[in-house]
Amino acid sequence: MKADVSVPLENVNLLMQIAHLKTKVTQLYNQNGPGSPDYISLSIKLNLLINEYIDEKIVDLM
Image (cartoon, rainbow, N blue to C red; front, side, top):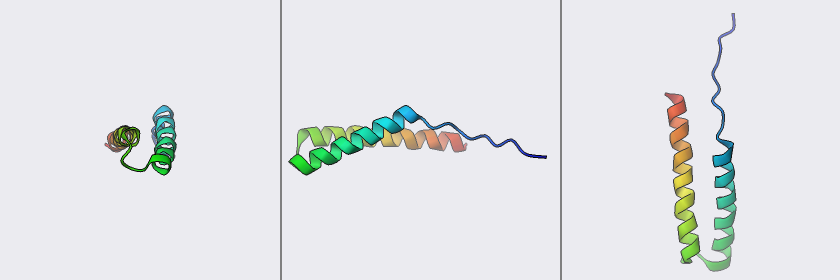
């Protein structure tokens, strides 16, 4: 008898946003350095999206 294992679906939209922002943040860092207002703003947004993704994963584990 096989047990049903629930595999949560990935939030692909959120992962795509994270990947896009990560690329953009890297480009801004290379072009303007870490003191750029755009770099700082996008870094904060990227951090929030990563935290959102981690929170979703924690909820899936419960």
